[in-house]
Image 1 (cartoon, rainbow, N blue to C red):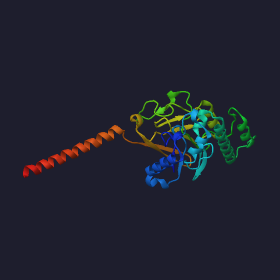
Image 2: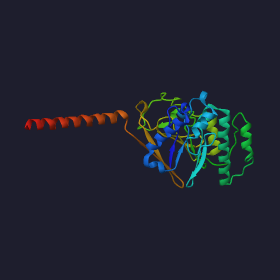
Image 3: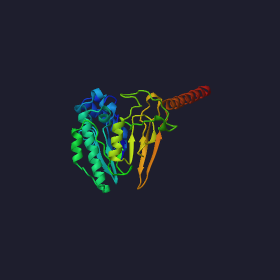
Image 4: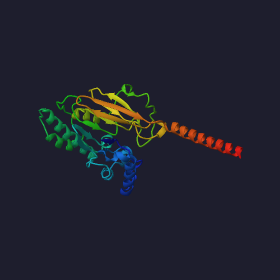
Length: 290
């Protein structure tokens, strides 16, 4: 399965239906033969714009062009025996009430479903979903599930990290925290949204993006998060992608990075100059014989 964690467009909030179709067509052409695989795309900040631009109609326009997203920009699905919950990070970051309530409903229903599967006794059940709809703040509760027994959670923005020093970046993912898009690369979900997701879902693993670097982090409650790099050369970064393999009792994560753009250009010009030099020498030798 292919999962794209947002930002398939540069300025998605300004695109029309026809322009979105063109962007998707170009993206599918990039996938090539891999397009036949199951595909899931969730919205990013470049796709939806800044918080001041976040509106239901923009989300509807975006979601219409991304497979299997609901009206809140979320999705729940299962591949083989692995369950996924894909959440609209923009709604949680911007705290847009209408969209955020839609995200909360998805989280609560997924939480209830996983508790049922685990045989956990629920004292409030589905009624809690209705309470969330009328609440201005997140409603905290313990699910009775143990950490790491829930679904795989997919996000565009990483979870909140109170101590950035605990963030472990890999040596082959060098980049600086500078603004290359709608929001700075250091942006994360708010602390309350992070706690809500971890408490309600007890994620098996959280896979996020946006930071343009590959890293992993273990949160205080034991939740494991992996942040994947972007597939672009912005600001001399190394584009890449991650492989995640789910076993019965283990998860394997590996990643591949491409050479930096300047390196490829150097190799290209070196080959070009070598070819021109060979052609020049051949022509000179031919002229000398004549």
